[in-house]
Amino acid sequence: MSLKWRIAIILGLVAASFWTLFPRTVVERVKRNGEFVYDTVRRVPLKRGLDLQGGMHLALEVDESKGAVADKSKAIDNALKVVRNRIDEFGVSEPLVQKAGNDRIIVELPGIDDPQRAQDVVQKSAFLEFQITDETQALEKSLPRLDALLKGKAVAVAVAPGAKKDTSTSNAGLQSLFTADTSKKTDSTKADSAAAGGTVGGPGAFSKLVQQGRMPGEYYVANTDVGTVTQYLAMPEVAAAMPPGKVLRWSSDTVSLGGRIYRALYVLDAKPIITGEYLTDAKPNTSPTEGNLVQFTMNNEGARRFRTETGRHIKDYMAIVLDQRVMGQPPIIQSAIGANGQITMGGKDLQAAQDLALVLRAGSLPVPLKVADVRVIGASLGQDSIHKSIVAGSIAVALVVIIMLGYYRFSGALAVAALVLYILYTLAALAGFQAVLTLPGLAGFVLSIGIAVDANVLIFERIREELAHGKTVRTAIDEGFRHAMSAIVDSNVSTALTAAVLYQYGTGPVRGFAVTLLAGIAASMITSIFVVRTFYMIWLNRSRDAQTTLSI
Image (cartoon, rainbow, N blue to C red):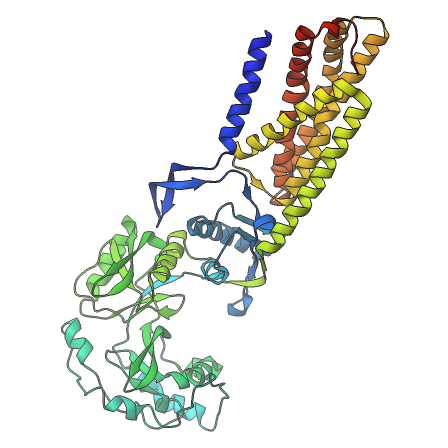
């Protein structure tokens, strides 16, 4: 290859490297609210990992407090897919989601600015059910037995700071708000205005804490009594006395009635008419009348089942239950519902709607997860790591430069000049492959600097041998590069194979180290062989003394 072509290739690589490393705004296809759209984004090369820019580390385990899990390893494998989908939807740059052992999931989120929101999104089960509210007055019929079981039993419930325990019955506050209306509902407006007031079942231990609400199967419990009722419901004897085929679910929201705060408790048919397993898409939206909501779409089978089941329950109330919490007030079914529906957020902000749509799209967790370990890494720690890495890298480069200049003189200077291009090419390669720069990655980069000059050492020693045998400078340089080539290829290939194995079977920081090392090996082959030889050719063509002496 002619010298001009060699110089053109080197300059072209330099220009391409600068272009790759230059931050710029580009148009990319990005995912927003579950849809791919084209948008302008700021492209930042060499994104920093968790250990360099700070972020969040989570360790998740199976929560067996809600039931034993037979095969934890398989459950974790299934949950891993859901968690990874949620993180991808969450929009974090270069996250790490991996299995650790047989019973843990590790999640690392670099640059996260809302750790609590991320934790909620990852941990939420997102099990969606559609259940019909009870119209048989099953709870009222069970109240005498429940009161008898709880007679003489007391529970201790902590009262929230600043809240005063209200010892009066719940009935007094609600009687002034609702008037009795036992007529059959005909539409949602009439249903909202209808209510049956009064104490449910008498002044027993359980019945005095609940009262009938605006619709069949709905009851109100004063917010100060929610803990007491929850503990009652958790008792085995109370659970056994509950109406068969029915379940009790709390509302996700509270309501203010008569100057007091209440939470709704719903009695629902235990068997849901359909679950969220058929859901294919969910999007957040805002309605002028209903506020923030989530609109969902089901697949063909789900739409068919939903249409059939809702057609059987015209004029009934349907509760939308997410993770055993009723979302908003159950709507009345006016007609059969097909593939599309919506979930009102009950006054929650748009971000809550976005997060709910996110977890619904990603799917429900096959098992409940709990946070076993959480660590938030501050940006200051990352900056300290970067500073120390720069110091270590500077010392390493300085030592290499001093040794090469002191031992190989002029030839060492050519190797140092090539080393500058090597650093540029390596960083450009990492940016081109959108690699994430981590602390182990920086270690691999510093290590590869030594590998880069190692090839030059082999070449220079072969040139010295050829000069000692009385060959001319030009011939010695040609022979030195030719004879050293096999040793250079062997050493670099063996190192590259090791790095490839680390990349294939490693995760997280190990992969970061492997990627940096591979990029460094590729760049060193170019600079030590192609670039240094080009520098020699330029010197041979321009120097008068090049034909007789070589400083090496």
